[in-house]
Amino acid sequence: AQSVTQPDIHITVSEGASLELRCNYSYGATPYLFWYVQSPGQGLQLLLKYFSGDTLVQGIKGFEAEFKRSQSSFNLRKPSVHWSDAAEYFCAVVTMDDKIIFGKGTRLHILP
Amino acid sequence: GAGVSQSPRYKVAKRGQDVALRCDPISGHVSLFWYQQALGQGPEFLTYFQNEAQLDKSGLPSDRFFAERPEGSVSTLKIQRTQQEDSAVYLCASSWTGQANTGELFFGEGSRLTVL
Image 1 (cartoon, chains in turn blue, red):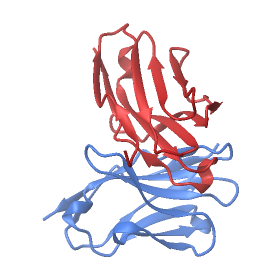
Image 2 (spheres, each protein chain N blue to C red):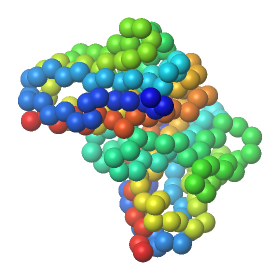
Image 3 (cartoon, each protein chain N blue to C red):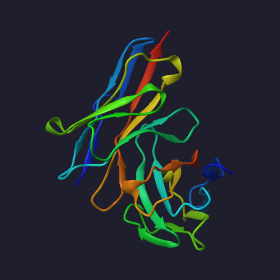
Image 4 (cartoon, one colour):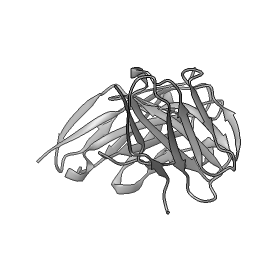
């Protein structure tokens, strides 16, 4: 069965520092992958998606993610975080029966 | 409205009560999804509609859960005889495409259900 693993439950970084959030997936073919962000009291918002083509995808708010088939990973990165990036981040994959399943999420904390 | 609207935002129910949660998707969106998000967890798939057809209900936890979208627009998730383990945020999402894998999901802010 397809699955998504986010190994880090919490990540804390200082404002202005770089960020990498990890995501590993289990899928037989080329996956469709997403990163969503959930700010407190808000609905989930799509940051970026990978369907095919260039393995480095750019998203909103200065985020990017790199698809690495050899590592079954789709890690989210940002060169310099802002206090407003504090939120919960979810990696997701589309299953063979056309459902989107989510990882358990990584909560990002920003130190001033 | 411009986004996915869910109501009520908060619902407190006594164990055994029936509840109904409403989702008003973005106008014209074909697909509608319900997810359940327990505290500290990611969203878990419940059910999926394409227009008025419920194509997948494999994620519904029990026969106490029922969802409908009779006219292919507004959807209602009904939970009968609520139990404490039903306490969660129920998220609705819609997409303009008929398939999850090609479309972005637009999420509502969720309905937080607390069962006492």
